[in-house]
Amino acid sequence: MPTLVQPLLPEPRGPISLSVIDLLTERAPHHHLSRVVTSLVDADPYGLDVQLTLYLCYELHYRGFADVDAGWEWNAGLLHLRGRLEELFLNAVRADVGEIEDGATAAAELDQLCVEPVDGAGPSYYLRDEGSWEQMREYFAHRSLYHLKEGDPHAWTIPRLTGQAKASFVAVEFDEFGGGKGARLHQQLFADLMAAADLDSSYLRYLPDVPAESLIVVNLMSLFGLHRRLRGSSVGHFAATEVTSPPGSRRMAQALERLGAPAPCRDFYLEHVEADAVHEQVVRTDVVGDLVAREPQLDRDVVFGIRAFAVVEDRLADHLMTCWREGRSSLRNPLD
Image (tube, rainbow, N blue to C red; front, top):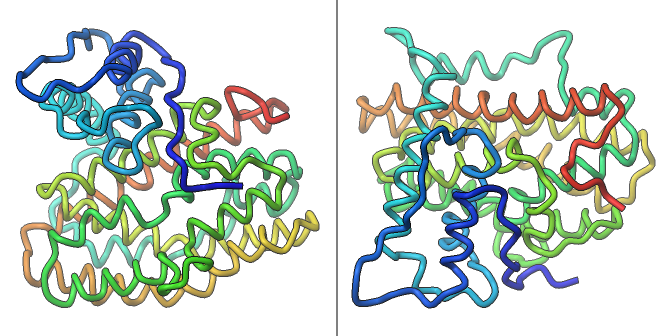
């Protein structure tokens, strides 16, 4: 099944996404500035309308959409709206992260992140111990919005780094991109996983079906990666992703073993257990350590990125566990 095609535009989920989707069906103006007229009064920064609109705007920097004029990518009017939405979103995340205490450092934050709780909870624990195959397939659908572009959001950070931090960041991303082998791209491995799980592996196929919580996870990466001023937060998010991946992936591999899942499903997570265990040390010492040594003013930004990662991941985890404990689908449109 093809994974490199441009996706179709989804249906709007409110007045903000409606205004943008209507705009994207037209040809982008090239010789004049035309602002996107839509009200953000009472807009929920974590709501589906805002998050879908942000996802659409960000996707123009990735693969775009079928039959959408590529000129929209850098349209000033659309970028102005995106900026207003980003401010709304980032303010909400900052409020949830809270005040970063004096003396907080990226090194201490990563040390704390490496300590696994004795009695852990959340989707990977639940799926390992008691989750069903259908719940596992739902989890794949949620995560497809990131894993089918795995590595891409963080890659925006590379030009903003220098020295050892840059070299080591690229080394980790090289593994994410399959070490030069297309069949080993983590994006491709996840597409193989989805096909083996009898899911559609087409890029963004499940965009219309996931809740806002799934969009928030990916939008935060794009927001951090696309802004140079947020490069420290992007590195923090990247570090948190790599540090938490091995134990989480190990639990997922155990869950898939318990469920008798096809080999490509297990292979994706086993790849992350092995590769990301090495990445963890590289990221801690050579990426974060070198960045903070060169630009000490970014230390608190790295801390923010780590904590923001936890905020959005916890929102998705809470949504999944609430739905599954209540015996209902975690998707807006249940799988066939």
